Image (cartoon, rainbow, N blue to C red):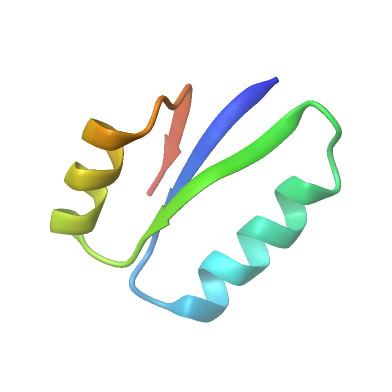
Length: 53
């Protein structure tokens, strides 16, 4: 299982990416962020394999 973090300031983009990744059984969205500061907090608090920005 690959744990993914999504970072984008547009909620609709994050939603679309979350939907895309949910269609793959070996991928899981572990967190989302809407800004650079939130992205740093996400990386520090969540174990991620990939961060999509």
